[in-house]
Amino acid sequence: MDSQTFRTVLGQWPSGVCVVTTAGPRGAHGMTASSFSSVSLDPPLVSVCLGNHLPSRALLGEAGKFALSFLGKDQAHIGRRFAGQQPGITDRFAGLDWITTPNGCPVLADAVAWLDCRVAHAYPGGDHTIFVGEVTAAATPRIISPLLFHSRNWMQIADPLPASVQLTVDVPAGGPLADELRRSGARIRDDGRCYEFLADGPAALPSPERIIAAKRAGHTVVGYVTDAFDPDREDDVLATISALHALGCDEVGCMESERTPASPLQVRRVLQDAVVRVRPAVLRVRLSGQNRLALVNALVAMKSGVTHFDVVAPGAGSAGLPLDDLLHLSRQLEVAGPIAADLALLRE
Ligand SMILES: Cc1cc2nc3c(=O)[nH]c(=O)nc-3n(C[C@H](O)[C@H](O)[C@H](O)COP(=O)(O)O)c2cc1C
Image (cartoon, rainbow, N blue to C red; front, side, top):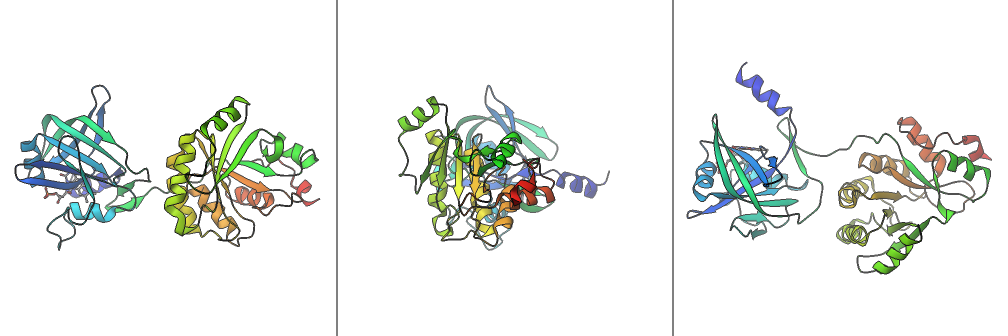
């Protein structure tokens, strides 16, 4: 096997990206690495492989400790910088926000996660050294979607289409369409099985006691973030989503406002991060029927990992995404949904 083939094959293995840092008598040093791997849970061990010729390898060996900062989807520039791919930069740490771990290594304040390690073993691995670190501290400062590396390209997660979607339908209760939808697995919005509330911001939430009482009463608790796709509110929206999750909501909803139509780009930005914040709870989306991009936004939501949608049946009188539009979209995409519902009923 020639080395070019070997490199090409290795490039087909997608990975996350981290910055390995260490600090010793000669100061702090850091480099980009994708060879991170988890090794053991008890004791907590991880590994990373560093090229024997690299300054990083020597410094890490001397210091006997290292830290790993996992990079987020918006940190490819940091990955490039710590791989020495930004030639003008002499101080790799300059201008970024760092904190110091208990072991004394620098980690990125806005990393997706970081690990603080003591070198437990250093094994020879050909032209690399396999460092096994015992993890002594760890944190997840910023839960966002990770940065990926594949085939020599910086990438992000692009979820495939879901296998199926679940619908909550605003439909006049008691009619034949509501019965049909219920039979095919949809939830009927005013069935009285949910406790729904709206949240404008992370501080405007019901009390934990109220949530516990609703759960005791057998209700599914659904907290909706209003105006969730306003680009000027992105930080606030994500903070509200985290707060709703922490409050114990069974489902967290992102609601498009009638005033600020959502752009597909903003839908992607918010939902990609919302999905990872809310897991394993359900993330649902209530799109507006007034936005000409509504179906594009629904597609983007599905591609971002959302499987739960609020829709409106004819005659319900509210301005959400029409049920028949979403059924049509999911059929075209071969995404399963309550499509057993007799569409003829929709036209009556
Ligand atoms: C995405 C990516 C992943 C990398 N992963 C590793 C790795 O796991 N081990 C390694 O030795 N070098 C890796 N490198 C290369 C180092 O980051 C690069 O050689 C760096 O300049 C080493 O820093 P130093 O010369 O200051 O020691 C990677 C580079 C990139 C772009």
